[in-house]
Image 1 (cartoon, rainbow, N blue to C red):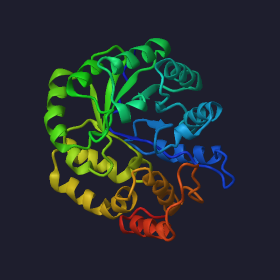
Image 2 (cartoon, one colour; image 1 turned 30 degrees about the vertical axis):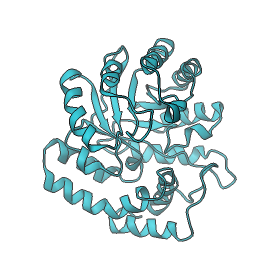
Image 3 (cartoon, rainbow, N blue to C red; image 1 turned 120 degrees about the vertical axis):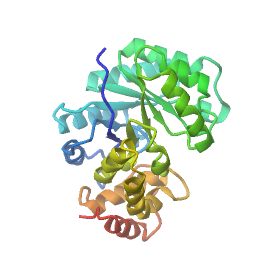
Image 4 (cartoon, one colour; image 1 turned 180 degrees about the vertical axis):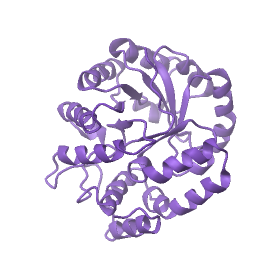
Length: 307
């Protein structure tokens, strides 16, 4: 199996909708062509939280993968979120993703674990079954420490050693765990590509990673590519300057009452960039309060990212 190289920026773009709520495939082509044409973008991750993937039908999910793949002309890998709760149905989901043209899978924990936790060995079984059924290269997804679906260090190391697992998307959002666990993972699994997904903590995590797999990359790819380079060069002053430049955007997109509101805010940011015409979302997401779009547009202008 050829290992994908995601050492750089991997945006997780939104799924655009028409005003009447249908998937806007023409807008997908526009988003994908834009992101795929930026040097430093190493792939696109679709059908995740930012992409409202669990709100789509199976046919829509397949077409979204196909359309993003078409948008980049097959030049970049398309990574599909594998989100269904049961292991068997998740494996079937992965097989459908392969058929649609996905090059890798980002494996979400079974959603019941968020509330109830997971049995020892269950996560390893999930990764094993998905890879054996689909052949997809897989990305380990480390959930926030605040959930019961976060994996302890032993589980992370065991998943990282499994056939097919080549990268980690780490969003533990507990800096004590980040600072103590990442060095161990680096030492014990040196081939594993480590990607931060801490949209709101990029500065802290940027010095320890190979890249970033973030929804943020779908609205601000250029400065995030610069920040990744600064992190790899251990250039704190440059990384800090980029962080400060982006702080108004970070506050308006990710410092809201719920992280899910960030998905809605991402679409407003793309309107400000002139990529989308409107910020239509699907239930259970709801529109942001009146005036939020203008606030997000002002933040994008302050960061030099508005059209």
